[in-house]
Image (cartoon, rainbow, N blue to C red; front, top):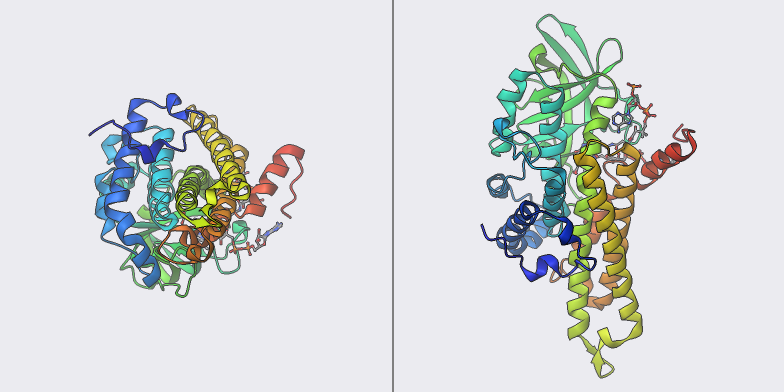
Length: 395
Ligand code: TGC
Ligand code: FAD
């Protein structure tokens, strides 16, 4: 693999943050960048317009090792650090947030909990298949009436000898219509939350797709419905109980989003910059007008600040020191930054900005989901408010 960085990977590196990366980080980033440009960028707009998930790409993602990159090699993982994981999500979301969603869910919300909370048998049974893309997973926490407040969940299970009986439903579940397995969070008879691995084909388990989304159109989203589903006790994750189980997974996925959003912002900035240099109005390129230069200057400033935040968070994460509140700050700031840049960039393209000839409108629509899932913009502010004051304002 070549370590030579393509110009497009680096031209938003205004503060030479590349100097803080290792050769391995740069190789990982370049491999993902090349694959996305070769296999995904040419087709993603059409899939999004059709509202179709490009399932054939799963094998391409598996081949470059983006499923479970931080997990040990013995389980099919990549044995990489969290900066590498962040750079991967950045390059994937640079193309499309929906593609990054697929990878976040598989890596952080399915493989990570099976590795961290699962038994050795569960690790060996599921992780290699998830790493190779032979199995797709999804993560069921949100319910129709419990989104920001998952502790109120109604999905529950009862003991029935060597198995449990699971009832309830989950809503807004990324990958659910295409998943082979679901990591589902449900209450036991004592009302404590536990994780269960539910497999497609178990009687009473269905995954209806949610249609008519204007956002993440190339990502499959659906429900999980459990009607007296018999789940073997061997499928219960044995090593965690309580809301800290799912929230621990979210810390990892939110971290990946903090990096991913930078990718979407870079794509919008680069598209707008190029367009402004070429588009002539009043006898000169619009890039020559102060108002457009202000937009571009502010975009590059905000991208640079977000890069520094993500990089520092990555080093803390590598040392096991990143806190939930630090992750909330980065997810909240960087997604909001990307959405603001996407909206400004779209205006710079005038009427052309609303078409699928350019990626910006797709990024805007995608980012409306990204600012909502994995904890809304408001919830992350409240997590920070709690950290600052010691007083919970959620309830
Ligand atoms: P609270 O009382 O604060 O905490 C309950 C228990 O959890 C522990 N805890 C954590 N543990 C590990 N990691 C964290 N980040 C944790 N945060 C809290 C806490 O210590 C306590 O433990 P214990 O042992 O004492 O019971 O909980 P709360 O009910 O007050 O809720 C707090 C709040 C609102 C912050 C939390 O519920 C929250 O984060 N809500 C947002 C829900 C959310 O983010 N849902 C995301 C669903 S998944 C998704 O969107 C995937 S999209 C994927 C994609 O396509 O990319
Ligand atoms: P609500 O919780 O009803 O919030 C509505 C509004 O009220 C928001 O603005 C919120 O910020 C505000 N609000 C809520 N509580 C408070 C408060 N205490 N103080 C002030 N304001 C408050 N979930 C999964 O489990 N797995 C997935 O794979 C998954 N994928 C998703 C994919 C997509 C495309 C989308 C859109 C969502 C996905 N989700 C998934 C669900 C997502 O995590 C939830 O949508 C999110 O947590 C918000 O929940 P909600 O939609 O029920 O909104």
